[in-house]
Length: 268
Image (cartoon, rainbow, N blue to C red; front, side, top):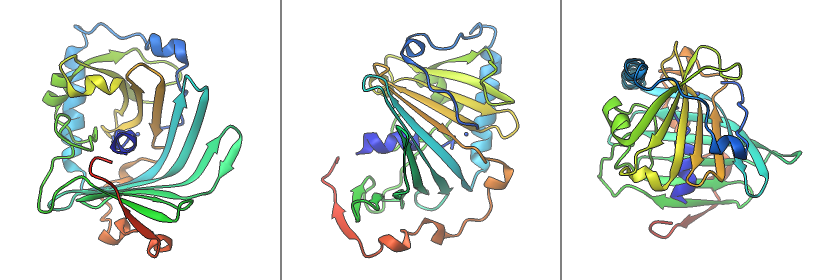
């Protein structure tokens, strides 16, 4: 399950644009053309520094999310639409992802689902199943750094340190194209062989807003290039940040309060 949840949280930059075109199989084998890495080193470091500093200023966030997965081998693709919320809280931050619409192969479903991290548990809540699956990811009283690429059980590419990113990834700046979200810098991050992420992802791509200094679009290609996940945040703006979200914004949905709670096996 955590691998599934990682696919959502990698998208949380939250760490955000118009719905992007997913790469076809040949594009997976041949990523976009990168600029000269040597010449762009200073630019890359500057982008990452601004990303890190902006992350430090975000106390809460609320915006729309469009999340797509393309399964290349199965020739299948779906897009989920919803909202994402985040808030700094002690001892651990909390976040809330709500999907209320699914598009797949011409079919539209309004079935709702939620993914909630309350500082200790990840809750997987689906209207179709009428239950709440509880996954413990933090022990009682334990404090974790969700933004630590190397240690977090739920890695979130937001608020991370430039030095950690450069330690774990080879980062290149990509030449802009007409399909890029406007006024963004496109970074491709490929895990270094020694990184813990090398066995999970082939690459991550971030389109970082030059105005917000946050990613407004994220692409994650799994190891082997068979699944391509894309998240876009179509209404992310200054108004999305630091609005003073109340703790109640992270409560379980009202309709799910009487649904059965199922405790997942450790690691499940």
